[in-house]
Amino acid sequence: MASLLVALFTAAALRPARLSGWCLAATLGTHALNAAYQASLPTAARDSQVTFVVVGIALTLFDLAAWFLGRWAAESSRRTRELVKTSEAMTAEAVAAERLRIARELHDIVAHAVTIMVLQTSGARRQLGRDPELVAAALASVESVGKQAMAELRRLLQVLRTVGSTDEEALETDMIAGLKDLDVLLSQTTAAGVSVDLSASGIEGRLPSSIELCVYRVVQEALTNVVRHAGPGAHADVVLAVADGTVTVEVSNDHAGSVSNVTRDLTSGYGLAGLHERIKLMGGEISTGPLDDGGYRVGVTLPAAIP
Image (tube, helix red, strand yellow):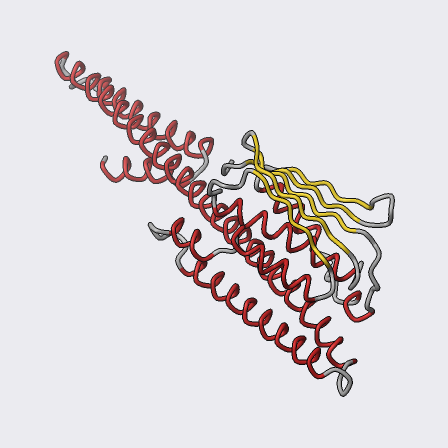
């Protein structure tokens, strides 16, 4: 009998409910026929017949218990597989999101640095033999921008290596670009020939590092595009304000500069698209478009706290 119950349990655990149900019916039928046969024998006493009935009921309960336990095991196994698949899907999604974040950060760091460095190098090449001091200043600016880009890349790699640590927020606060780095960014843009005015209000308090990084990247991408598409001689205004739990960033420029063919060809085509996605992930809104005077405007609103 034990082997029959084991076989019924195995069928219920490994086979669909309909197929294992037929196995249950066959087992119940076999035990019922055996009990009926034993009870109908002429030699069976009245007490023996009662015993046969009790044994038959017990066997029925055992059969049902074995089948239901098998079905429970099958359902548990199915749920476990679903949980594993869900966990793997969530892990894959997290990895894809992290790769996208890394790609976005690398784009912002490299695109700005390369644009400024190429423009400065191009200007220095044209001044070779004419203005050694100007060439030296341009090369010094290239060196400075290159060092900053390398420092930002090291910061990014350091943060990625320590993701999940208990002191991750403190690490990001110290190492990720933020409002404190805007002055350097504006200086680099000015050195590339684009004058910039910064107006800031309400930023006395410390913003979350992720919000500061987002603000920095907005200004960086906008000014990089000014250098590329408006060129030296253009003017840009950066307005930054924090009020009523909202951070507002606006970068606008005229079109009075001279566009260099060298910088015009440096665009990757993903800058503004990546910026839109970054702002969306932070729970903010962004609007971009040309101005009536031929310039361009980038406007962003962000929550002053992490959504």
